[in-house]
Image 1 (cartoon, rainbow, N blue to C red):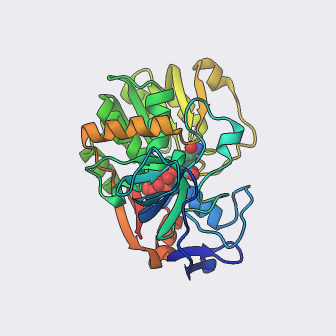
Image 2: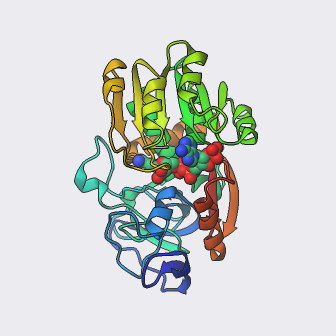
Length: 337
Ligand SMILES: NC(=O)c1ccc[n+]([C@@H]2O[C@H](COP(=O)([O-])OP(=O)(O)OC[C@H]3O[C@@H](n4cnc5c(N)ncnc54)[C@H](OP(=O)(O)O)[C@@H]3O)[C@@H](O)[C@H]2O)c1
C-alpha cells in the first residue's frame, strides 16, 4: 500500500511517498481502507518537529481521516465490513473528562497517523459517519468539528439566543459558526479578509468584523452586543486571549482552543478574568461519546463541512504549504487517499 512517511526526521523535505505492507487487524481491531484525510494545524507543528511529543521514525502523519472497514479482527462487535467510519484523534478517550492517560495516544503523533491507504485501529477508537457526507467531508470531523462541538455544545451548553464570538475562518471557527447557527445562537466572526467574511455571512454569521481593519475588535464586539458575548472560541492564543476576555459578558465562557499567534503571554493581568467572572476552559478536542452525538446532530441537520482545497495524497506537500501559509483558505484542507 501507499503511505506518506517522514523517514528520518522532521520537515517538508522529509515527506515521502512510501510502499508498505497492508497491516492486518488483530483482536478487536478493524482494517480501514482510508479514503480521505484532513489537515490540522497540529499536523504542521508536528511536521516541523515543534510539538513536545516523542515521534518514532519512520512516521506516518495526519490525525483526521475517514474510510471504509474492509476487514475485522476477532471479537469486533462495533463494526462490520462495509461500514463507513472516521477515527477519533485520542484513541482511548471514550467518555467523561479528559485524563492524562487517555490523552497520550493520539493519531498522527505520537501514534502513526492516517496518511496511508490502509490503517488498523482498535474498534473503540473509531466512529460511524453520517450517510450524507462524502469521504472528504467526513475526514474533517475528528479534530476541527469535534473541538468546536465539545467546547460550545457539550462543555459550553450553548443555548438558542446565546451570542458566540469566533476568530478567523479556519477549520475550528467555521465549524463553530455552523454549530452556532444550528443551535439558534447569534455568531459574530472575525477575519483578516472581507471576502471570507462575506462567505461567513452566507453560512449564517450574524455579524462580522475584519480584525486587520479593526484591531480593537473586542470593543467592536461590546458595541454590537451591548454587554458582551456568552462564549468565545479563542483560536489565536497569546495575541487574542486578553481581548477575548474583554469581549465576554459578565459570567461568560472563554474556550482556549488554539495558539495561531503563539502560546506565551509574558506578563498577563488577570483582572479581566475576575471582573468578568469568566469561566476559562482549555480544549483537548473531545471524547468518542461527544463525537457520536455530534455526528447524530450533523446527520439530522444535514450539515456539510466546508472544504476549500482537495489534493491527491502524492501532493500532500502542497497541502501542507497552503496550511503553513495560513491565509488562502476558508474551512478545511483535505487530501484524497
Ligand atoms: N486544543 C484543541 O483541542 C485544538 C483543537 C483543534 C485546533 N486547535 C488549534 O486551534 C487553532 C486553530 O485551528 P484550525 O485548525 O481552525 O486552524 P486553521 O484552519 O489553520 O485556521 C487558520 C485561520 O485562522 C485565522 N487566524 C490566524 N491567526 C489569527 C489571529 N491571530 N487571530 C484571529 N484569527 C487568526 C485566519 O483566518 P482569516 O484568514 O479569516 O483571517 C486563518 O486563515 C490552531 O492553533 C490549532 O492548533 C486546538
